[in-house]
Image 1 (spheres, rainbow, N blue to C red):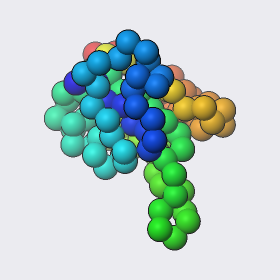
Image 2 (image 1 turned 135 degrees about the vertical axis):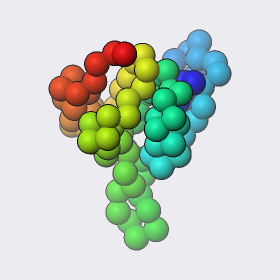
Image 3 (image 1 turned 90 degrees about the vertical axis):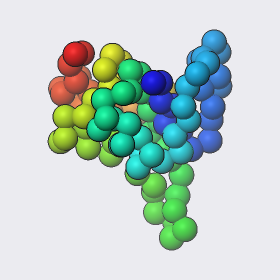
Length: 102
């Protein structure tokens, strides 16, 4: 299973030849699939928009933190397609410190 986490974009917006990706608009959608161990590739966005109160919605950084704490990682690869340089760097730091291919 390939999962693309983004609040607005679609996989083909980032990966022109992408097909068969599952689009996730929030991190809670992704967690059960990671827990089951069926995610092969995960592509992450850092900015997931705002909630009704105007607060940032949890995104790729928070999902990386959760994966590091629980050990539920994709089987093969994590891609970061976030255009936010700060959040991109945070995600890559967590991934590089904790993720190992199985």
